[in-house]
Image (cartoon, rainbow, N blue to C red):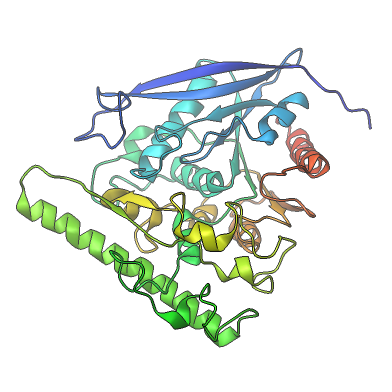
Length: 391
């Protein structure tokens, strides 16, 4: 098969829209003056026109430095990497507001750039975001955040995407955090107070890899309990602030030890081809206590919106049931970030009549030093787009 490679032009894109809010949770101009300003990077294959554009958005990461958008564009696919209002900082992120941001990009590419079709490519944390968006665009139900702040998605008139891809992604931020949380923490203020029998990094713990089924069951239940314990504290604190009525609406807090998934040190747990004793952020024992852990810094409202198992609405599995557009799921079989079983669960849940699942054997989360694996993933994407006339 003859493959054509296109020279790619990169252009910065700015999307602005008005929003009135009681207070802003972002630092600086964005949102503080009644307007949200979003920045994206537009990948344009030269000499290749298209009526379809692929949009990539992560709740908090900027994606233009990933290898996928450039290689896709070189193959002739028009791509826009979309930063939300929370670029590289999810400490105060509200998932419902990210949907408004993604909706603004879709409206922009259709009304300003002239594309007729939009396909969402949900990579990593963008997978559950894309599903959440599409479910609310097709069947909007949300008028308020879990903290009862108004974010009316019925009035927003979100434009549904025409297709959706779920690649190297997980079910939800709330679920993946819970599966990574260290349940040995007994005191959220002093994380050195721990239940030794649940500390998988304690070399004196009798529970060592390979872990027994009974231990894993106890461990997973304890992780859920910790998530719910934090959620209860958050709900009570919000009520306390409301009762005090002294002008304080929010506060920040720290969630310690959030990289203790048994998967990382026991390859027999949810097995795939990943490297043992490793995760996408490095050595799990070190990351568990490091400053860059998942949900390390939070606000009360942000916890409920993105990290709470009980209250976050950004549940990819539930959202997938509501979508109707063509759907492609791609699992990287050596993924060291997104859990192995999540992709198939999303694929099985997807309500689309036209759905397909592929596996890139041996591919890691970022395709680092794996150009052939990246090319395989891109070939799956390109073929899927072409067959469905997304060109």
